[in-house]
Length: 103
Image (cartoon, rainbow, N blue to C red; front, top):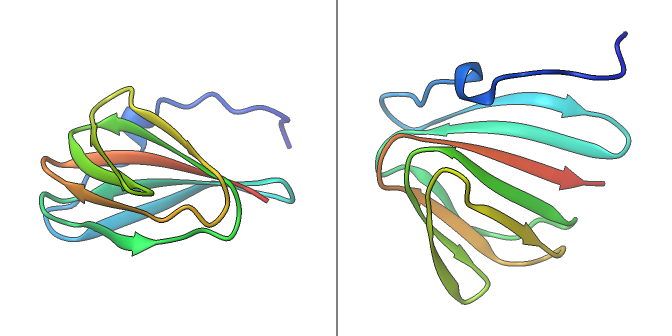
């Protein structure tokens, strides 16, 4: 198997009409990378990850909270979080988001 991947994330997943959709891109001993698609108004309620995580907005706009900070997510927004940082996302438009978890 190849040791590298070249992917166009904008083409990998289209946001659904309702709810959310996910696609796992990588899941190995070191990282888990998941592409999320959110319909308008959907998202993830406040939660924490037990390991460090990074969020990148690929497409669309979302209201994000990270700790006690509100963030307007748009294409190019990148957030790095320590383990157990409370966070949430709510899509304002159809959204594609990349989540990277460091194991």
